Length: 155
Image (cartoon, rainbow, N blue to C red; front, side):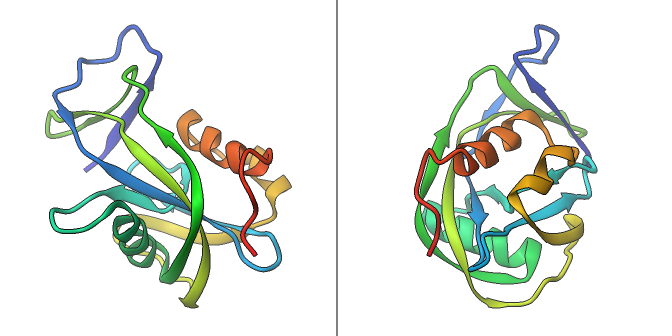
């Protein structure tokens, strides 16, 4: 299923769902960040996704990271809360989801790089390499919030 992101777009469809979600800025000991190339829109993104019933938001971030990148992670902080009501994802099935996501700071705790049904590529990037990557504005904001020092680096 593909999706289209709308942010501050007057032509965006009206939201018809709100789903809690979590993502993770995963930083290794060298200061590199883990990103995945999404299959549904071809853009580079943080690992993350919708929370399941019966799990916490940190557990959601850990599960999504493992599923999408092959890495287990340890949560070490929070990058931020993202809930812009003018940012929606429109899916092929008619769902138009308003964004509500907590972005966690994490470090790898095991595993190895692997792609999933949701990703076509998974890589570690130096922070300065990110600027040229195709990325939706809301993900770039999360990465920049971490990179610009709005929160502590993982150690």
